[in-house]
Image 1 (cartoon, rainbow, N blue to C red):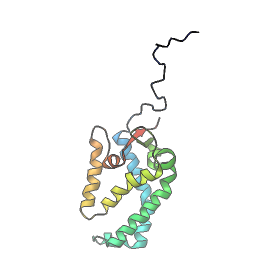
Image 2: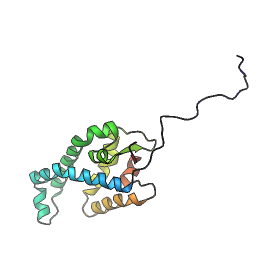
Image 3: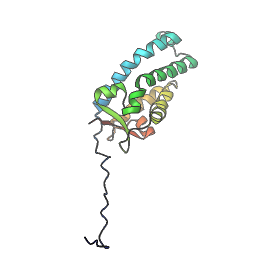
Length: 166
């Protein structure tokens, strides 16, 4: 068979590994967040009782900075212990796994565990500790879900989106 030297190359121009994905519904994201929040109470409440943070909240006072920071650090460790495996393996928390959604980067790839934790979860958790402004930051983060691309503030910081698992 003779090859025409002037023939256009026949290289494959598409990548089959990148498939179209569908963004998670706002309701799915809410459901996953609620489930993760309920699961989080299982380890957060005992931490708050042990450190004494709960006593301040019960009395309507802001806990001292060191107790708030300790509660957040230990709570974040609890979050990692419960969700770390699924986040690393599939980009999912337990709530996201139950609802059928996952975290991916803008190329639809699962991120490393470190990137998910340091860029996606940690900044908002730290910001939420700031008296008064922290609550506003958390509210703004949540309200971003109503944008067309459904990406919250933490998604923008980390370069992520949440998609349906097929």
